Image (cartoon, rainbow, N blue to C red; front, side):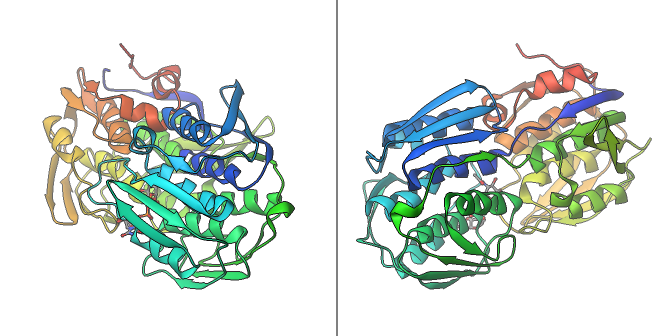
Length: 417
Ligand code: UD1
């Protein structure tokens, strides 16, 4: 890619990876044919599909944005290493399979390389609901005749643990209360999906979820439109912020990005919602010069850790010094070395990164280490003078639906070889 802009035009944001993968896993809860729409065309959806097929769900994809998943009830509750190690979200089959089949054998999950990503909260929560666990040879096995309701309070609002307990509780005997639950928009999306299926959940969108278990026969397959991807939306905001110009982002939900949009406004971006031919668009106008800010990542509604590589890249070409504090994954700074290769002035110490803005980055070969770091390399390439070549782009394909096509359609000089 070659840096520079300006960018101009409209970019459509597809459904969220971090929602659709969980919706797919939740189809393990009952028989029937589910329809998911607004499905992003990304590699992780294919991998999750392969995993569900191995378990016994049939999958059709009539168009790239539409999935039909048929659960015939004839499930083999075993998730093999070759598939599980490829995505973190494979852990999301644990809750539905355990509550439905009474037994699960699951390879320990992989996913992005953020350092240790334990699952102790998933396990402790399911144990409180009556499950027993065995760990050996890289596999976990869980057993339960029928899970029972429990009062669970998390030390930390884990996204994955909230989802697993939620789905497990849907068919448990009695009431489960999850306190200090994560409340990301993708969790609310999952709750809406489960409620449409017949689950009884209250407190959707809050940090206390109350689930009254229902009988297995009372759930039904449904059709659901996946919530738009706030991280992809933020990626296009970051792209126009560093390249200059104006972009209209279709499908973005500003109410899911409130705190981030406030911080982007502090950096000098003008962001408004406009109504164009019946559709809501997020209009983003780049300033001539970005201003630095300090940012700390926090669970939702705070600034998501997944936005951080984008923010650091924007700060790399902003006026002044910005301090970014990571509160979720201490190890999540690997892409900083790549940004330094592009001339960014970033120093990290423990959980903090200090970013001193420079007028322009300078193009160089760099590597994508994970999905969001890969997207940040693309944004950095737009902020760089000359040519930037990014390798390891299979990481970007895991979470981005035609990033190259979407950016080149609005004027970016980027191609895939
Ligand atoms: C999800 C997202 C990921 C995002 C993250 C935080 C998916 C597929 N991935 O990951 O993109 O960055 O939320 O917003 O949706 N933890 C424990 N024990 C546990 C569970 C979590 O210590 O049992 C720790 C993790 O190591 C991490 C923190 O809690 O430090 C956050 O994890 P969690 O919220 O569970 O994130 P994921 O669901 O893995």
